[in-house]
Structures are given as C-alpha cells and as structure tokens.
Length: 120
Image 1 (tube, helix red, strand yellow):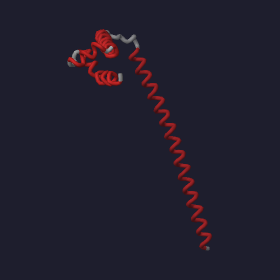
Image 2 (tube, rainbow, N blue to C red; image 1 turned 90 degrees about the vertical axis):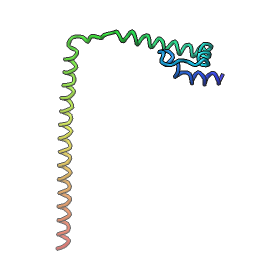
Image 3 (cartoon, rainbow, N blue to C red; image 1 turned 45 degrees about the vertical axis):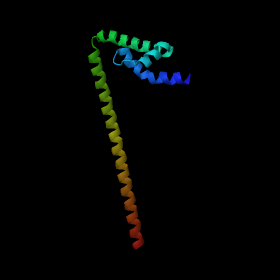
Image 4 (cartoon, helix red, strand yellow; image 1 turned 30 degrees about the vertical axis):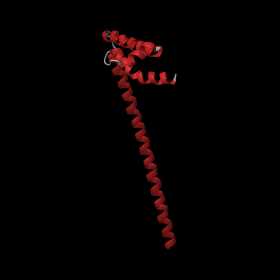
C-alpha cells in the first residue's frame, strides 16, 4: 500500500500535463492510472477544470454602467483620507519635535545655570 501511495504522489504532477495533452504517460504510468481509482479521479478532476476554463474563456463580463466612475470616486476619496492622515501625522511629529527641542534647550539652560553657580 505504501508503494502505491508514493507512486500516486509521484504521478500527480504528470497527470495535470496528461489531462491537457502536453505530457504523454509512459506505458507503466498509463497501466498504473488504468488500475488506480485515485489517479483516475485526479485525472478526471484535471479534465473538468480544463473544460471549465475553456468555457470561461469565451465569457465576456460587462461591467454595470457607472462602475468605472464609482471606482475612480472611491480611489479619490481614499486618497483624500490618506492626505488628511499624513497632514495630521505630520503635525503631530512637528509638535513632538518642538516639545523635544524645547525640553532639550531647557535642560541645557539648567545645566549651564547650575555650572555657573558652582563656579561662583
């Protein structure tokens, strides 16, 4: 049973090619597929998928009227929100930077004042 399992696993990639005709199974592989229900099911599944893809190839989807305009409006609104966020974030960074600079200046001033008192 383990030997069959690994043979099926090895053959799995080949079955996709066999389904679309791009790969020809060797006589040993074909004999295995003819006697293995799992491989037959996999091959049938690949063929169903290929058939469905061929059918879909001919389908043309027509978007509803106004969809393109709705998408552009949505993108514009999302862009406006992003600009507002970046402006708010930019202001916050500026405020925090200003506070940090003022704190550093105050600390430096306090150190200079303390040293000048010690020197006197």
